[in-house]
Image 1 (cartoon, rainbow, N blue to C red):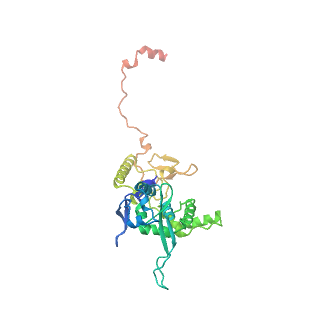
Image 2 (spheres, rainbow, N blue to C red; image 1 turned 180 degrees about the vertical axis):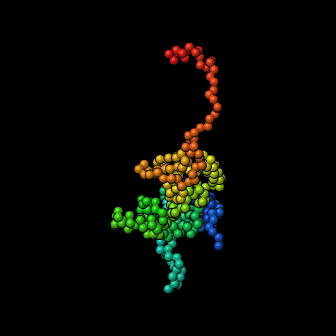
Image 3 (tube, helix red, strand yellow; image 1 turned 90 degrees about the vertical axis):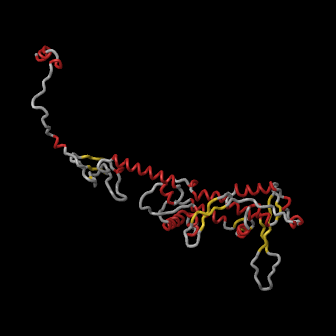
Length: 344
C-alpha cells in the first residue's frame, strides 16, 4: 500500500512548512511545469538596530535579546502549521485606519490601513517593534505578512472557520467513486439525504480539497501495482522501479516455465473469469481440459489449445516383450518338497 509520508511532494511540503531547504516547482515560458527549483532554508535576519528605534519611546526593539529572537524563530517554523503561522502573525500585527491621508481632496489612496508590529517576549509581554525587526525575526517578506493580516479580522482569519468546516465535511465522505464529477453529485446527494438543512460545499471547495489531499480518479486500462503508479507520479526512484521490473520479469518467466500447454484461465479478455474462479478442473483422456465456475454449473471447455497427448485407449494392447516365458532358477523357488506339500 502506498505511504503518503514517503511521497516526494509530501516531503517537500513538510520541509517548506518547517522553513528548511526543499525543491520547488518552476514554470518556464512555453514549457511544462518541472520540479527543479532549489529553495534555500529560512534564516533569521539581522537585528536592524537603527538609531531611530533606540531613540523611540514606543518601540522596544533593543530590549529583545538575541536568544529570545532565536527562540521565537525556532518555535514559529518548527512547531506551527501554516494555519497556525497565519493566525499567530495576524495576532501580532495591529491593523488600524489610516490616520492621515497624503492625497488631495477627491483622490482615493491605495493604502486604506496602517499596520503596527508587535512581538511577545519570553514573559508573554507584548512589545511594539519596527517592521524590519519583525520581518527579520520570523524570516518573512513584507508581502506575506501584509497578505496574512489583510485576510484577518481582530487577529483571526475570517475564512478559517468556513474552510475547516468544509474540510471536515469532505473528510467524512466516501472518496471511492471513479470520476470527480460523479463523486461530487454523490456527495451532494448524500448531504441532502442525511441532513437536508446542511448545504453541501461548492464545487470549487470540493475540488480544492481533493487536490489538497493529492487524490486523482481515473479508469485504468490495466491494473497496476503501487510501485508502478508511484513511478509514474515520480514518487518512486528509478533504482527501485528497475528492481521491481526485474523481479516482475523473472516471475513471469518462471510462471511460463511452470505451465503446461497454457494456463487454466477460462477467459482471455479483461473482466473474464480467472483461474481463481475455477471450482472444478477435469482432465480428459483426449487431452482436453474442462472447468466448472460453480459447483451447480456445467463443465466448460477451456479456450486454450488442446494438449497433444496420446489417448489412453491406445495403451490397451501392450506389445509382447519375450517369445517364451522366462525360466526361474530353483534357488529362487526353494525346495521342490515345499511346493509338493502345498499342492497336496
